[in-house]
Length: 140
Image: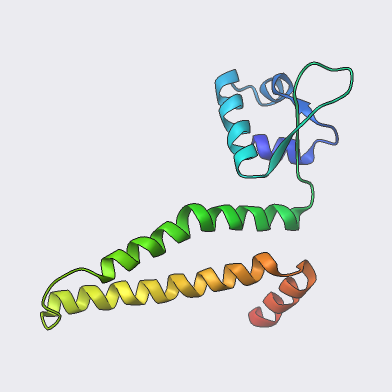
């Protein structure tokens, strides 16, 4: 809600503005604004002549999507791939059907994860028009 509010606001907002507009607590507002800043989706804005901190969201939706993908990749996909690397090293009799089944499943998940990783890297590095045109061709 905070990100959406900052996204549609034409001017930067203070924490008090956000609290009032969304009817949420100061703690909730502060915690979520900090997290949005950590994700690179919102930035602090200093307005000359004002002592309060103001916040504004990135308005370029393509940049927003790429930043969300970048962060989700870093926070979710990369740790999963690291864990799968460790799981592939599980010791056991590779002739045992349970061990074999486990390793096959881990390998298949890892292949899918690596493919997703490459696809997301391509998207992050792509220009908006190229990516959307390619996606539309795939869908057709």
